[in-house]
Image 1 (cartoon, rainbow, N blue to C red):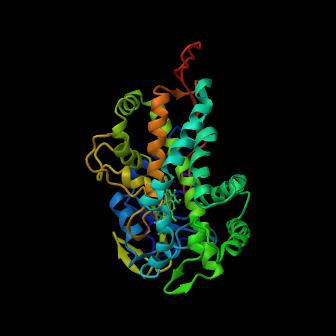
Image 2: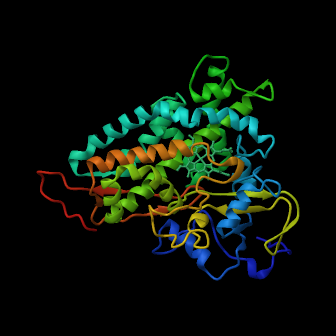
Image 3: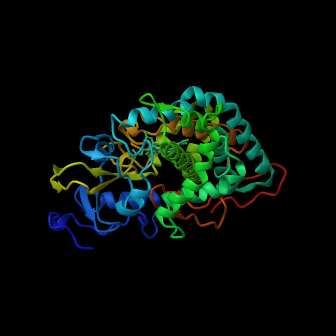
Length: 408
Ligand code: HEM
């Protein structure tokens, strides 16, 4: 592509946020390698329509939260395709317009609302684990991570479990597109799915999260059908993919680190706080903002309408924010990160996500305190708006059965 004339040569790097992986490195070390390479803190890449990238934690936090300079009208690149297709609610609105729409979804995800489903989360967690515990092995991704958060979420929004594969596929095409659909097609298919749900629940008495959003008010008026659909799609995209992938990274870490595994297994009361350190160490989300007006920023000229991508992995893993950032330190006092965002759009699902991971660790470690990656299994990753461990196969010893070879 033509490189705009205001972009200095020393700022240009060829980097594709959808293909960040470097040979031999995992998702997080690949992003970190960009931060550690000899580049300025703000660079520009011609990929994905051409956009800026900030590479330091303080800048990630600033870009995500300073809406006076950086608008969330567009959060994905390429701006003209993914960005336009992803203009959902409330993410695409800046304060003060953002608040009344956000209010419609926060009550369904509040700590009180999560407490109401905690027993169900625990019961499903236990039944999934006990379903494969005696086998001494599982495909963690398929048998657990793609089951628990999605099934709980489908209950919260009162959609049939049978729709899970279709919705998960669509959510994945926004966050890690495999080329099978264009961004406008993903948006269209989401709309075709959700429009009849909006119609059916409009005016109803349903207590589920979608019904309450659809029948809510903004500034004293009812939502339009389009607004209701855009809110619902945002919640579906946020809820269907992120926790699944976060769990994959956490369990891979514990499978490979016996010391940390033993520490949490022997002191389960530490798991609650540990989830914050795990969120710092395993950030997944890579989103951006649109520049509001021409401005000087960290020594570069930004032009109105340009995109600035703020990769959350580069906040928690920035050593100027957290000493020894790759070390998971459950004693770390303050873990600084933007793993759940920063500012007015900070993830409203964070409490649900942390609760699900906490319960997973409590119930798993009580039953399977020792486990490893299956011998010979090669762990692979995919980058994108939400990074992922593609698949994770785990093994453990079952008392009374012949010991499995446990090392990789
Ligand atoms: C580990 C799990 C999760 C991670 C890492 C995560 C991360 C994030 C991040 C970084 C943002 C901010 C995006 C931005 O500023 O542009 C965000 C926003 C959002 N997330 Fe999450 N999320 C997670 C789980 C969830 C869940 C379970 C739900 C819903 C059930 C959810 C729903 C949302 C919504 C609706 C927004 C937009 C909020 C707004 O615009 O005010 N997320 N999330």
